Image (cartoon, rainbow, N blue to C red; front, side, top):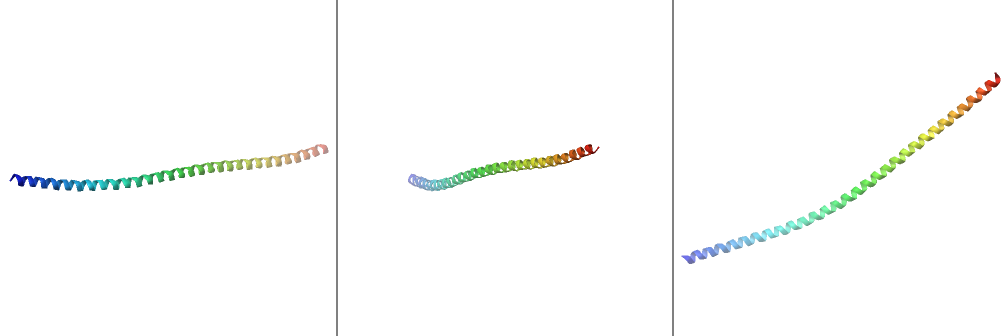
Length: 110
């Protein structure tokens, strides 16, 4: 009877050992698969970070170019304004000269 109990215990231990070995093998293979998946994801994150930096640089360059363009347009607007004011001043100076000439002629006639 003790032999039968001992055989059952040995059989049970052997089955338990086999099942735990299978579970350990399954878990180890799962760990390897997850590590590979993690490595792939890390590479993707690094690629995305590189792309993000490139896009940030593009955005900064566009902002800088836009700022320069705005300043150039603003400068052009000021230049146009100054030209317009100079033209108006020249027109008024000619008009003033004509009026002064006419006034001088009237004074000479009087």
